[in-house]
Amino acid sequence: MTGQEPRFSRRQYLTQVGGVATTLALAGCSSLGDDETTNRSSTTPGESTNSSNITAYEGLTYAERRQGALKLDLYVPQTESDPPLLVYFHGGGWIAGTRKEDTAMLRRLAETGYAVATVDYRLSEIPDGMEPALEPDPDNPTPRATFPAQILDTKASVRWLRANAGQYGYDADQVAVWGTSAGSHLAALTATVDDVTDVAGDVYTDEQTTPTVATEQSGTVQAAMLWFTPTDFLRMQDQFEREGVSGVISHNAANSPESLLLGGQITENEAKVERANPITYVDEGTPPMQMMHGLQDRVVPYLQDVILYESLQDAGVDATLYLLHELGHEFFFDDLITDPTIKQTVRVTHTHTSDTSISGDLVAGRAPAGPEAMTDFLARTIHD
Image (cartoon, rainbow, N blue to C red; front, side):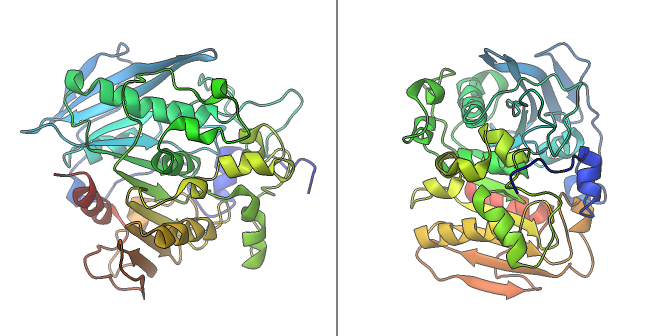
């Protein structure tokens, strides 16, 4: 379809697929402790606040763009040695959302011994006269720009965090990224792209892909956790049709989130789609990845994570893919922490070993999908 699709608010968009319209939560996850911290968005930018064993630094500016300043919040636990760093990118179809959405979850994760940064990145531009399939929040102050601005921003945040590790007290050599939905796409790109200039190809100019923030630092990361990840935009619609599933919107439409991200209808911009696809950059040097995706997802086809997993497997990269049989888009942690464990297919590949696929029970050495699996993965990949 070449026209514009019907519009949804973000709440309607997620409700249509049986997902959630509120932020992710860790309620009921005793392994991550009680929620003793609260969002302190009213603090002066850069001011630290202490709650429990977490020091919070909010409103730190990591980049000044032509469209405006980009900020991050940082939660650092009090530990005997500098903790590893986890950098989080929020979802919202690249058109909605802010770094503040998942604060409670991220602060609790910090209590397990990881410094956690939650990052704003430039959202998609909306052309005059265009009615996006996913309605933006008119009060969202986040600057807007067209891809590849978003990967420049996420890479800049990693470099800035490395440059300032001594000031805030975390291990700049041990960095993982995590994202959900659109944020997971950016986390995957951040992990697979070694240098942001690699995104240019024959499509973008040097000016569009040249880093300007903490350029003496590396933007590479050591691991990635990905939840319901868009990867190859041009295959999304076909994947839904292959599974006999009716998605919420047409991803090929001119007003789809993917088309707005790239600044043009994806079916007419195949070269740009390729440069935005994390699979394009997968090689034997790609860091380990853990992926989770609901089989009932009607926003992002679960096959998007499958094809990423298969590319990692072909490259000999350590990867784990959880396919959650009864879950849709943007599930809660509570949906994962059940007794008995929810039905799930777990696929694991180790470097230079064969793939393992098991339905339901655990793969040897892997916890079921949920917080324990995440902290186990981080312990394997970014702990000394």
